[in-house]
Length: 516
Image 1: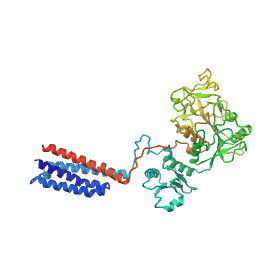
Image 2: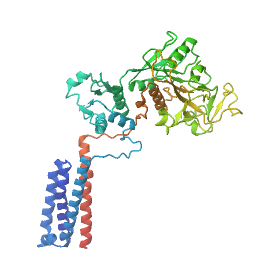
Image 3: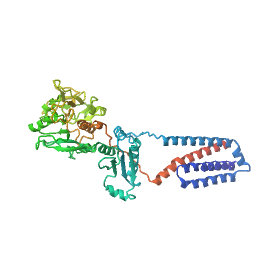
Image 4: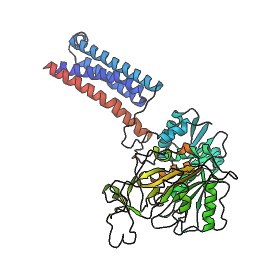
């Protein structure tokens, strides 16, 4: 009886191994096919050798054969189902991203940019297959190409294509992805295979560099290219990545706004502008110019009359918010969390993302003005406008009678028709004003929606409404890079060995229990 049981076990395991060679071959593990086939045949032969006279015939004609036939038909049905699912997946591919940070989901900005391509874009990625960045670059470029037939790409092995390496000047330390657009001038280089960098390259190529933003200098303002904590280096690089040119403007040398200015930014001045400088900005606004004014508490920019012409007044206070939520980043009531509104295009898409405004003053909409400004961001309900700026750091701050209670507007946008026809620059004059100028500095730009808010404001001022969006963020992921041999071994273990072992073990247990 025991000998007969071993005979049946060997026959069943041999058949399982022999039939599973098809699965091994299907998944490309051809080096294991012959070994499994020989083991399966050996098991069948050993089973026949140990069986008693007529045992093999009964094995294939008895109840065991019926169960075996049912199992085989079930297996064939599963294989047919998997083949059908594979065919559907091949012809109608769809992906589900279950990662916490949606690492494999392209942002709305990327989708809109790629699907909106009017000319063919082509990307050359110079990576060897054994480089860690190769899988990331291949996957990213493939997902872009899936969005639009106008985006194509090619992965180039630098060792096999030295002529292309020389043509594009590729080195180990240089950007490795080169993006070009049909009919465009030059190319854009991408240093890392990330969505943020690749989308910025497409935006830069498709929007050109004809729009120029000037940062007023000469009054203690941070340098737009300064990489220190107080500087605007990150914001400037982000503007240039979107095809905007950035340049300093010293009105003390020549009190006139250049003709190619798409917008003028006055941010973080420590001293008031002089009368000729103010007049130059007022003349610029009167002819349909676009201004971004980013104030600081306790500092007089000398632009009160200019702001009033747009219906805005900066209050002489500092916004304090004692709520714990508002102090998450600054640690004090001086860094309130403010919420963007949905009342303007600048903040409509980022209205669900708070902003961190360190040391901001509040703004007032003038009811007597012809222009009605739109609030862009409001402080919390527990905030107030502290007017005792001198005693704030000595005696502390408590809300007094007459001080404004929150929510308070800390950023506004306004537009009005030009006052002068001669030398008219645009159809309407535009203004964005905020009570703080530090929120887009290098120290704070990465917090919440700060950088998006500034870039959206700059895009609106430069009449680039299509770039008012939520930009893709740099999302870090933990990646495991495997060699080709490791991938093959992993496939063989999970798709072949483990299922076969489980099937064989189950049949063996069933036969042992049946034989008792």
